[in-house]
Length: 338
Ligand code: SF4
Image (tube, rainbow, N blue to C red):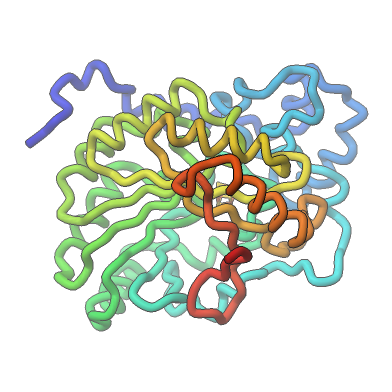
């Protein structure tokens, strides 16, 4: 039964698309919007030449003007440090190319398969492990999509499909509906997981149609959000989370431990508590993947483990995310704590 009868109370579908196409893409515009010194511009231009700047306005509005150390700004502001070549920091830190069995499909772990639905993101996170990913070679056109469906049909050990990207929710609702409908025809698929940063950075993306589609799907559905700091979670994110929960979507969060953003116990505790107040469970806290251009965000393992241990003394277990990293070739994520 449709539990969203009053569609006028929900955001218009077009609003998120407008916000997505009107992101801030120029370093100078970002600095001016935030009243930041133009002395930061040279470094920002250098970094942006390697990986474009992209910041949506709803996310920008949560940053503190005049503060170059704002934890949200630090996630998106390109820096000269990104141009340094540091030993061990590579373009494909998770060796995903080895698991790229078909265009747009990555099969790393038993039972679940990841699909790259879209190369687009609403925000370009400077630490992203896919900042060098060849999205252009992984477009899911109709021919590639049919190959993906053949791959999934042929392997009945696969029970879960993960929509990833880029950001899979950068895809239109009508395309998502078609894809979910095709997947639902494959009997051994039981779960759908969506990894998306859009409900955080542009909460208007959580449309009535998206919620209806997820609620009406035969799949058990989880949405893994990506917020790294409590300041990212404003009233509109809370409303988006409430709509998703109403649609019976399980809400989880994964974060990345980032120097200069969230490496204090107080920041982590505030993140967990704010997530839970919105019905979202802290799921993973990942250490940085060694991707070229992001070394300045790295936190040593010992510091990460000590932080996590202290967090365990402050919060109930269900509010403490698993501290983990992905090591290429392993059968699952590797936990850094007992
Ligand atoms: S894939 Fe996720 S982490 Fe990477 S840039 Fe896009 S939104 Fe950010």
